[in-house]
Length: 167
Image (cartoon, rainbow, N blue to C red):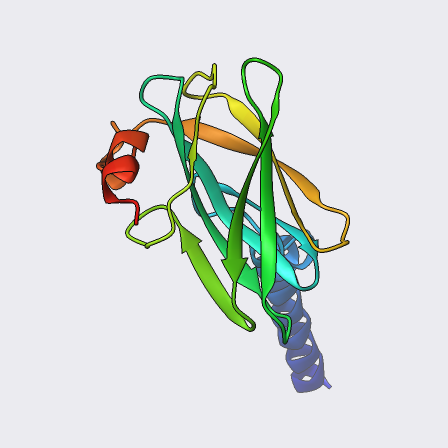
């Protein structure tokens, strides 16, 4: 009888230790279930077929800015993406970028497609609204961070560099 009670007591102690050691993990939310942007830019979707990834503006003078963004087309047909903003004078300005079917188009950076916004009045560290849209779909407005090429990862990506390398 004494052996059984010792055996039962050791099982209860083991269960208590196991429960107390894993109790915090049991009630704490998992960090891997929360999606966090791992870059300086922002992302969004127009619909399931068009995604904008890591959108950032690079401006050294506050008057012009290079757009850096990856446009992801998951549709089976190509699309002409409208990229719209309002300049400092209050005028709507539109740029376009064609994204092939089932592909990604990099805008800015070391890609061939360069888009430079002009007539701005922006400051580094602020958010600038840009509207992305294609076809007859309702578009999406992203508040895109404005950064400078002083950051090492953005060296040479400012508007002056984009203007000299544009096709």
